[in-house]
Image 1 (cartoon, rainbow, N blue to C red):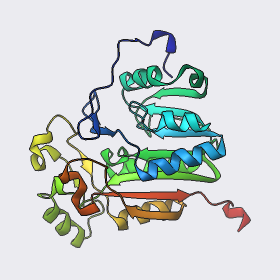
Image 2: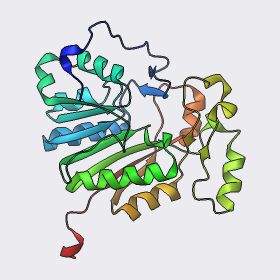
Image 3: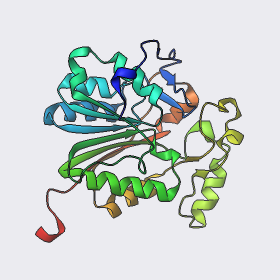
Image 4: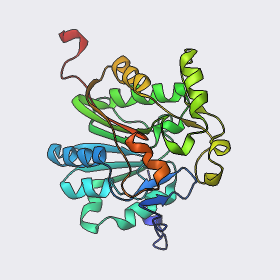
Length: 257
């Protein structure tokens, strides 16, 4: 947890670049205008009026609108500076409904089973290795109450930004590699973003995402390609650069089947 008393008021959100706001720890960007799947999370969080989790919350582009809709939000981020800025950007009357949790998901973040109504993770889990992603999905499923929803958004192998890696992805996919989109040196394939993104990025396709959701126990309500509004063309990728999913934890347990 972040101690609010120790938060500096000198923190400032970095300037937006074509709708993308750089993180302070070189873990990519926060999308300034909430993505369509993020907007669905915001709406759902407001309707449930319950406890929800925003993983990789950054400066609060999703967490703050969810608070304004009436949700109680746990904002999790790897960098305490992001959470400090988020707190300062949150209207004072809403701060009582905001909890800040610093730490790397899934290992450093713990909540009670069935304690959350919704979880949002946009552009964050693809920085994990395969085993880390599996662990994250299991933890999210466990934390959600029956009927709770998981709003997920990730980078696809088809993104123009990593077009140089795409042939390698196809070869690994054909060979049956479990994680064909796993790049261990993304800077080699996108050198102009060196220092802005992590070296390890795990590009996820529809087959992998479907397997992750189904094998974990989720029901898939929606899956579609989504673009980042106003972002550079290399992020747009003819509308296939990113995949968004809404998954639901069933309203029953295995013992009830």
